[in-house]
Amino acid sequence: MAKYYYNKYNSVLVNIGPPVFKNRQEGWTADNNYAITVYDSWTYDSNLRKIIGTGPKATTISGLITDPSNYNKFWIEANSYFSTCFKRSLYGAPHIGADVWECPTGYVKAGLVTSNIIAEDGTYPEDGRHTDGFWYVKGILVNTIPTVSGTDATLGDKNTPFSFAYQVSDTDATNNLTVTEKLNGAILRTISNAPKATDINLDITKALFDSLNLNSINTITIEVNDGAGGVAYRNYTFTKTNTAPSISDIDKDLGVLSIVPSQVYQISDNEGDAVTVTEKIDNVVIRTFTATPNTDYTLTIPESEWFKLAVGTHSLRIEAVDARGGSSVRIYTFTRTDDKIKFELKTPFATDIKATKILVSPTWTIPTGATAKVEACNNAFDAVPTWEDITSQVLINRHYNFINDIKTALQWGISVRFTIEKGSATSQIILDGFGGAFE
Image 1: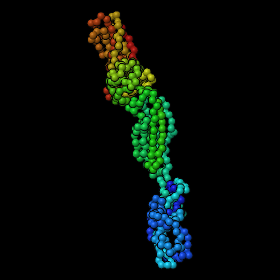
Image 2: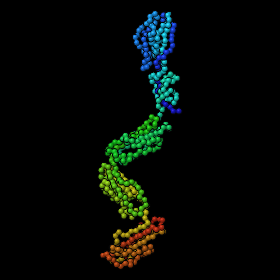
Image 3: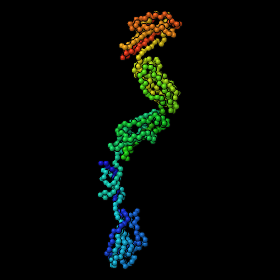
Image 4: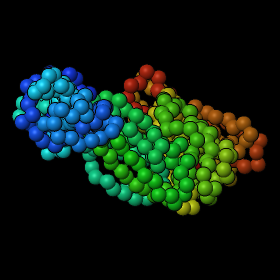
């Protein structure tokens, strides 16, 4: 059964209403001589809870029954509990009598004896006199204050949006908790019927963080209310030291690619600080530069780096650092795939005279289902070189005799071109390099 707080008071007997006629008393004789104060009339004072005599006031001797002034007068008897009004009358000598009015009485609450007595519901009256003679007033339900994990603390300097987890709990299992999160007194979120003993994340989002003044001290308040009078608080403070620069777009996976990726982005900084940007592929720097705010930049991979990338998963990074040390990162991931390897010498070998034969010896692994083609030319400096298929000779590691004997350029030159197509192969094609000779 639920328990409540009770306050215990003394109780006293008092008049609780105006007087009512009680009875008529007769048979008093002249021997009953004593002085009394009499009034012509009376009234009841509800605030003082007593009878008040009104009209002319006189002192007379009750035994002098022959004095007409003794008749039809009122006198009042009173003690600390009640008051009585008597109307004196003559009913026939030598006897006198009186009509009696008396105020009804009852018990009321008096001075406090003990506060916050804990007892089961119904042990004492909600607001009344108990059989033990004391007056009791029922208070609120006995309740255990809910709790918020951790202690009040400072989170230190912050220069980027952040979040943290906390928990609320209550030993009163029937209480439903309501959590209110605040930043500098403004409500961020209210959680009704909040989970107990379970992590709740409080987020200081980018929008919230950007709205704060630089170098300002800010207060996060977590309030938990159990709905039964119990409220607990947890306070955290932090100082906003700098806002990190912003990089447009979001982190994302670009999927499976067989061509060089390209992403357009912009840089901005709330404080207007200079921002240094570094672009990377798998932590290899592509370029570094100072960004102009709100200007389009294109993140891509140079062809020389693209050809070096193995088939598989890679990451492109944009790192932005402002002059105050605030930093942001944008990450794009992708999976490189390729169904063809094709390349040729960047710079041909110049020859004094026409080359007549060539030997090419690659170090490679060509799995079943894939096809390889090796070509060579002896007029590599021509606008349109004469490429000759030397694959069959390469496969048996023999030299190839050039057929071409003309050129249009001033210089004779040797070049080699590889084309390897994946076809139906399921395992990896590997080309570590090649050697050779010509004459």
